[in-house]
Amino acid sequence: MNFALVFRIGSAHADLAANALRKMKYQLRQAEGENDLIALIDGLAKVAAVTRSKDLGDEVRVLSRVTRRRKGVCLSSDGEIRIAMIAAASRKDLMEWVDFLGAWITEIAFEARTADEARVLLLHLRRIIGLQPELIVTCSKAEAALLSIIAS
Image (cartoon, rainbow, N blue to C red; front, side):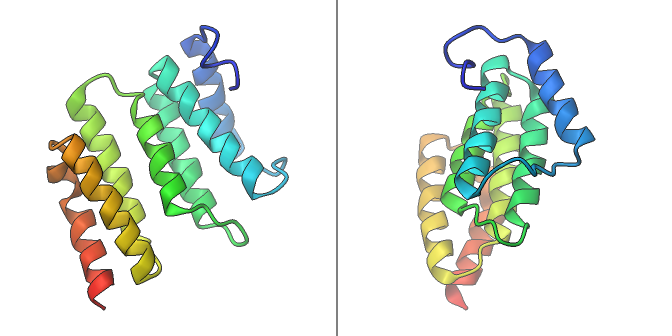
């Protein structure tokens, strides 16, 4: 993973990583703590982006979801949005990118725990939509969910 930004990595490596994640059922027992786990997910997202591997991008999303819901691990929504944006680069086509990123952001938004977290997420969401207005369609549910959490 660390070489993905320096050396050319082929799609075969990305496919191998995606298959390994599926076979392990997204359980990463070797990670020694939260920082290692986040670094691993981030690295896999970078490999997906560099190789344009949709398959690995999808698996990174599942791994992120499993990690988010795991007890004792706190994957921040800020960190997860950053990872989602990196993994979304696995999509060449703009509309595929919009659909992938919008769906992931919506998933994150629906799992916001506090009003403060929702406010921060809403700020990020609005900035991202400002940069790429096409996201407004796929992120409208995320915005509504965050506004609902803030209002309650």
